Image 1 (tube, chains in turn orange, purple):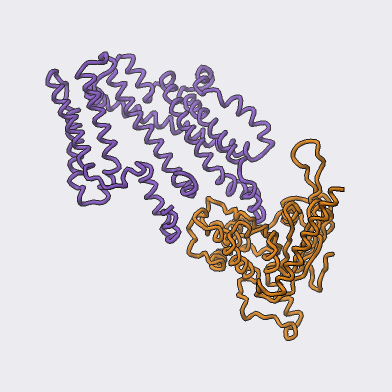
Image 2 (cartoon, helix red, strand yellow):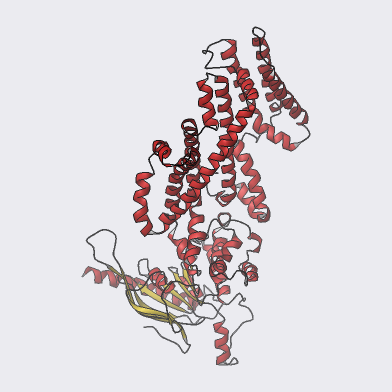
Length: 291
Length: 346
């Protein structure tokens, strides 16, 4: 079940269902998402994990406003989502940089689209430095490596200061080493560009109000992934989804201190737990389908 | 590959580097790579051969003027001058490695032409004059030829630009809006494939002047490929580009002008090139049957007088004129689509 903590939730998904008609006639509509409800707090990093076809990406597209749910609703703050907007940035597995624009112009795109480039021009430099690409301002996207291109895509999405950043397997196409480096990079961006060191939150000496303020300076992120390690390493909460129909089977809170040790006992225990759960879930659904 | 690496390490100068490689790449891929000092001898050598042939042949007949001889001497001296500069300037060297073989071949072709025509008389005479006679006609009739070229240029540009503007607008509309596509596509598919020249009888009757009707015919010939390719480019825009733009806060105008049109640009340029080819054809036909000016008219007029030297002179000018326009469009493409370099085989 979804647990809502003491934090004020920023994003609320209520009873959302979505079905698609598979190509070819005869077949009825297939339920991709079955009455999904979840709630995400401001500044939280939530991972959606599950096998392919479980509706993770569909859910993300609904939150982005690129598709509309068949039933149920999604709201940000008190506002119901009716279409795509700059307050919900989206980064795909393919960086989808505009190949006709240089790195700088790609990062500027959000400002140009909203017609605020004039007022916010200095932001561009700031974000280019934030993702470590200020030397590549005039390079075209195809000159960049996969990791660099994805950093440009992140900067392009973040320059609008979205309330929620939706990440659809953003590191899925990268090699294992680049991937681990980029996980730290994304975490740094989540914290608003601040490094991990020195920012130890000690609830006993920081008032609750201050803690909340500090958390709200973070960019709320929803990370779709099918890498369990990535989900444990990065997120505050992991939502495990199961396919046919897409459901949130379980939510697991990750209580480990950051930076997390990928080989610590706690990490591995959590990993084993999720693996087992996914395996079990997969078996149970296939049995359900069989009967 | 190495180029891409170089540009990665020096992104600030990438644009300049690009342009230089484009220039070399267009002229002769790979030809200028090796240092070949004998390149300096190619052009003067070919000019020498051509001159020798010319002197040998013209001994037997009276040449009306020396213009062809002077022309060959000019080529010879330019070739020798370039050869003299060869050791001193890297730019000259590079150019010569690229250009010398093709120039020498062209000069030898002229010599061969002379051998076949005035040398061996292999071809019937009024129809196949020697290069000397063609050059002679070009010089004596230069006033009218210049005038004709100018008229053709004006006609071509007005028709082409009109066709491109209308074609881009209709192409973007058809490609973007499914409602416009529903009504527009059948019109495009039925009217478009008719060759523009087939409308000549109608155009003559309807329009106030042959100039206007000719320009309209060229525009029509250009409009079809430009519209077709623009529309398909726009409607083939990658959906994820549009999705990303929407989540960046883009409105419809941004999606059209900053995403769909740039994404369609490679396609649009194919349409522009096809349209340019169609416009040359339509121009020449329209000039020879309608308007009483331009190179197309000049060719049929000279043919009427059986002055084939002038016919060929006009054809030579036409070739130079059309290929210059084509080159200009290539240059525009190289600037607009510079981002494609490295993605496609340039």
